[in-house]
Length: 202
Image (cartoon, rainbow, N blue to C red; front, side, top):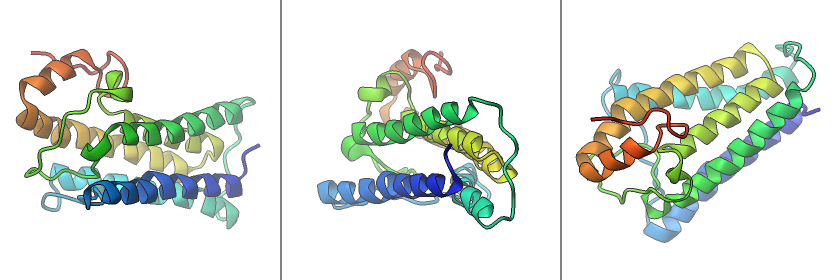
């Protein structure tokens, strides 16, 4: 059984590696942490997508804390769900780090329209155009299954909505404008989040 305390430690390790260590590594390589933060005016697609993801990550940390504090009890889960949850957490954790490393110096959190980075189509990017986001959603799905509460469910739902906004309305237009035919050819071949699903056409 994966307890709330164990889940909290996994979350802290995920945050430390996926955001802290990866940013430090980027800074060592390039002199920049890779953080671009929230972009756009308040209420714009850029701002809304980033804000929803920040709220989702905050809720993910709150999910084990409200159980530890006795504020909320998790919903009953069917037999075998914990094992599935553990697999999703592990795949999401490792997948996020692997995809981040695949991006090399092109890794960013947020979009700066004035920047031009290399188009990455290797590693996990061969099967998904957004393997970091896919892995993060798998991780949050595992969290929602291992600690099934309204808090963990909201964390997953808001992350899904925020990432859909970020990818469809911010990153894809930016990449199309920046890389033009190279990105369109890549996007016609590789799925948005999952293999073969969400390929761009025309």
